[in-house]
Image 1 (cartoon, rainbow, N blue to C red):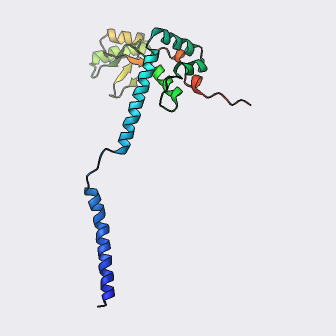
Image 2 (cartoon, one colour; image 1 turned 45 degrees about the vertical axis):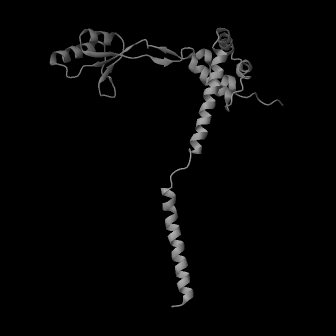
Image 3 (cartoon, rainbow, N blue to C red; image 1 turned 180 degrees about the horizontal axis):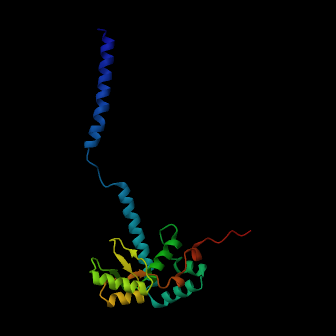
Length: 200
């Protein structure tokens, strides 16, 4: 056999072995040090918390909070930016972010006016079913809304009151939810954060 051919085949075989072994070795090599992408994320999160701390310190006094409320109610974009413009916040889109934080601060925990959910009992007896039909006919209620469990939900009003008095409903309290009660004052970020149009 020609020596040049043997050398060529040997070289090709060695190259193929290296190519096959390299990914395996790379896969088995343990990671070195922290993931740079996670480290960058950590720095960004820390900067955001630092910015929130500055913002909280600025508006934690009643006088500063009153000034904020006055500026919001007046839809004073320049005044809104002036209130935090000297805080050296690190984030891009600062005005939009600040407005989001302000909106959360104005949100309050409120129980809904109708603080219970009532559903028609399962497996009504013939007598209870007859009572239900009589009450439904009286109030001209021909159908109902089903919840995720397939139960008929009965909304507030005289129909529900009469069904509840007849013992035909299962009612449970509904927990309060965070509602922005002062949303009309807070307004929308576009009221404060859109850049002024360029002057001609």
